[in-house]
Structures are given as structure tokens and as C-alpha cells.
Amino acid sequence: MIGVNMRSKISIKISIIGYVNILMVLLVAIFHDVIESISEWLLVTLLFVYAILNGVYIQYEIRKQEKLQKALEDERILTSQILSTFPVGVVLTDQANDINYNNPKALEFMQSNMGEISNLKDVEFLSKLDNQIYTNLLQKNELIQINEVEINAENKLSKYYLNLMSMPFKPIGDERKYQKLIVLEDISNEVVLRNKLENQYLEMFKSFAKIIDAKDSYTGMHSTTVVDLVNIILNQLNLDKQIESDTRIAAALHDIGKIGIPELILNKPGKLTDEEYEIMKTHPVIGSELLSGISGYEQISTYIRHHHERPDGNGYPDGLLNDRIPIPSKIISIADAFDAITSKRVYRDARKVKGALEIIENSAGRQFDSELADIFVREIRKKYDSVIN
Image (cartoon, rainbow, N blue to C red; front, side, top):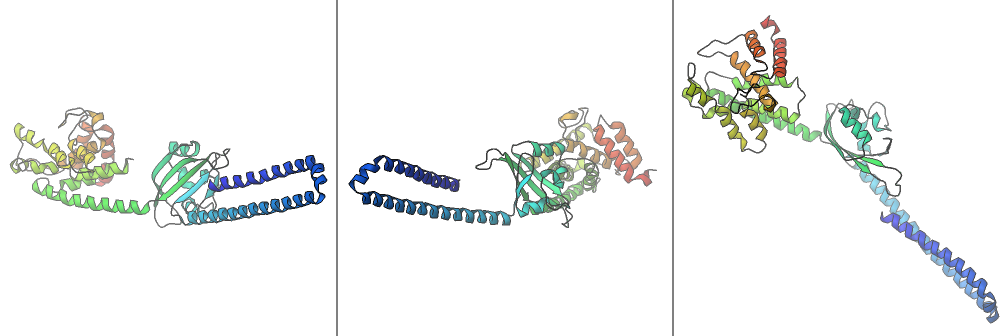
């Protein structure tokens, strides 16, 4: 911006000199006879001095402009060097999505078997984005942010992940072109670290769940099994990664509220009385309240609170109807019930897998979400096909 203004000022100055020269010629023409009548040498001397001063000034302005151009070129080279070593990919496109500029890091991110890429439409991983997001990226001149794009690259040993931001960009000095500036940031290390921490936390929660299960002598490894069963359903869905992670944690801790249930009720070798059952029904609320005060566990707390709700509204603690029950709670409910049905109790024998699946099928739409129940039954039948048949 400064460079453009300086060049304009120099051009204006030189233009003024041209006008002054024209004016001088007119003045000499008008007053030629008057000056010559005084002295012919005076006229020649004035013209000679003016010509020298005029040439010196023009040379001064030219050298000044050359220095400015050199400074601008050095600045351009420095900018290019910075962008070349920048760890973030930078891409400039025009209205037709033709790539007018990309730094080496951007080319590395966008590279494919095609070699040099000239248009955004040729970038393979972009074409695999959600159709609406891909269309907006190509057509709209507005701020668009896409987080955690997963990429499988042939020239890399494993997946890598990018954050992508596209924004309007008007180049200085050329208002005719309306371009987009696209920034690509590699967040692979952050994703790997986050996944590692989440796995560590999940293992810690599983260990905590074993302690919870140890309090209930009749459920054994119930919480650990529920997590495995929940994963069977999650693998068939396309939920947000954070929701998946929170669902697994909620499944591991869904019975944490049993810490507040008296052991005489928890380990009673027989059917609970109505009063005892009402006390047992408080464990989702206790568990939810234990976690609700921990930052980042607000959703997990909610999932735990509602894992005994039913689509028909006859569940507890809040009697929520189908649409108001969180999907993770519905998933945990199915896994929890299946393990309870197939586990041995003092007051009854364990049901076989086939019988447990029939109970879940018959209760779909009332006790369990119909769609999730269908998925679970189908996947369990695949897994235990030889046992069931």
C-alpha cells in the first residue's frame, strides 16, 4: 500500500515537471522579444540554467524511484521467502476457482497424482467433503471454516488432519478480480495428542468403572461390557467425534450413582420392594450430579441422567418422551439392558443371546429407540451368529 502511494507521488512530481516545462516554453515564446532586447546572452543563460536544474531534478527523482523499486523488490522477495517457509498453506484463487498463487506448504497439502494443481476442483480431498460444504467453498465469497478434515495421502504413512479457512480477498490495485484467500493448517499433532489423551482418560474411566462394579457383587464387569456393546452401535452411526467420545465415557460411568445406593439394596439376593426400587431409581440422578460440576462433563452428566428413560415416557427420572431423550442415552439404555438380561442374578438365570435379542425387538418403540434397537439386534446377530443358530 505504501509502495503504491510512493510510486503515485513520484509520477505526479514528474508530471508536474512536464507541465512546468510547457509553461516555461510558453513564457519564453511570449517574452522572447523583451528578454532578447535586454540581452541575447541573458536569454541563453536563463535557458541553459533552467535546463541543467530541470535535468538534475529529474535525475534525482529517477534515482529515488529506482531505490523505491529496489526496496519494493526486496520486500517482495522477503514476503515470498516468508510464505515459502511458512508452516501454513496459503492459496489465492479467482472467481473461476483457478489457483493464482500457492506457497509450497499448500501444494504439499493439496498434492495428488496429478502433479501441479491449477484449480480448486482438482484438489482430491476437497471433493470428498460434504456436498453442501464443498459447493459453498467453491461458489460463495464469504468466510467459511472447516475443521479437522481427515486426509489419506499416498505420500504419507498415515492419515493427517487439516483446518481450512476460506475468506474473500480483493487484491490491491485490481478491483476487477474478486479472489478468495484459503488458509490450510496442519493439526495432525494436535489430533493425535487429543486422541491419545482421550484413550488414556477412557482407560482410566474403565478402571474406575471396575471399582464401581466391584461394589455390586451381582453385576461384575457390567460397565466394561456396556462400553463394548455401546461401541457396536456407535460403529454403525455417523455421530460427531466429540459426542462419540462422551458417549463412551458416559457408558463407562453410567452406574457411578450406585455409590450412593445402600449395599443392602444393591446386593439384595431377590426382588426389590417398591420402596427399595424407588431408592435404586435415584442412581442416574446421583451419578449425574456427581459429574455435573466438572468442567467438560456437562453433556456426559446429561447422558448418564437419562440412560433409563423410555421413548414411551415411562422411564425415569424425568419421564422424557422419545425426541427429548439424548441419542447417547438411548444407546446406553439398549447396551445396559442387553447385558443385564444376559447376566446371571441370584434370583434368576441369565437369558441366552437369542432370547435377549427377542426382548429388545419386542420392546422397540416403547422401552428402546426403534432404529437403534434394529441396528443393535442386527449387529449382535452377526457377531453371535454361530451361537444363536
